[in-house]
Length: 389
Image 1 (cartoon, one colour):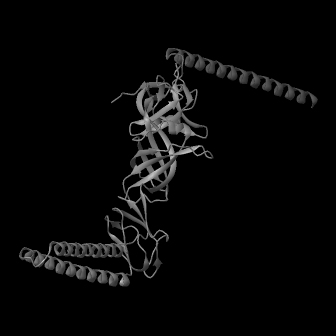
Image 2: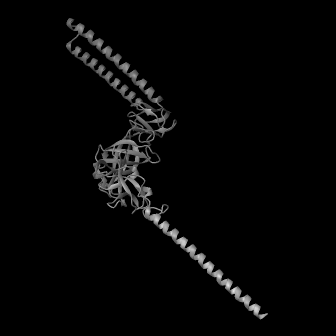
């Protein structure tokens, strides 16, 4: 029994050793196959240039359009704010003795001509006084006519000796006195008529009615408050507040563009007067910009102005080239290594031709004209010079 068991155990051990040797031979065979495959792949890669077909390649540098603007002649401009007003503000009040207003004939916003009646004052007493003076004129003329007739008859009788020369002189003096009384009566009548005419409140010049401060039934008199305000010719102006330094560069005749606050439309105007004094408190002076009438220009409103004060040289860039962030305005330039660099700039006047850059660049740099928002400082790019029209 024991002998048989020992034989059985020796057989099992022999079988296990054979199986292990078989597994080792298979592993060696598989390893040799894998090595052969790797050698083949390496040989194939070397034949293809040393890179596998599906190996990732470096992304090409993006192409960006650049421009070297140089120096262009651009207008120098000054920004200012101020209020709108009538260029010539005409207050209209009572010229004559006044009285009770019977009619008001205009409203704010109406256009009036020179001498047009704006309001009338009750004049019944003055009319009767005028009639009385007109009657006195007729009486004086009748006396003058009688004195002239008596003088003519006396001259006809002087040759016959019925009238002396002294009588002729007396009658001539009587005629002259009567004629003088006619002139006095006529002058008094005209004076009364002028007084009556001054009871009409009239426009001193053609223009636009801005305000009305009187109503029918109101009692007005000399020295009363202003009844109407007119803008002569409807002309407006902006009274731009400027610093002392800016005032030095402004001259009458400089062009300007005025934009009322809350609007987007600009109105062309010209500086017609520069303040000869500076406010000692604010250190500012006023430049008055003349404007043609437009219903969007309302006296008392606030506006901004861009005043052209001359011309100079500066780089002129398209608007797409200038960007801005919390640090201010900037452009991207391409350096000698074809890398992107940020350059902070100061921006001047913006016009249809482009944006004038007052500082930060000279114009000789290669400046990115578009797609700057997709670039980052230090990025490698391929610059391509823009074709100028």
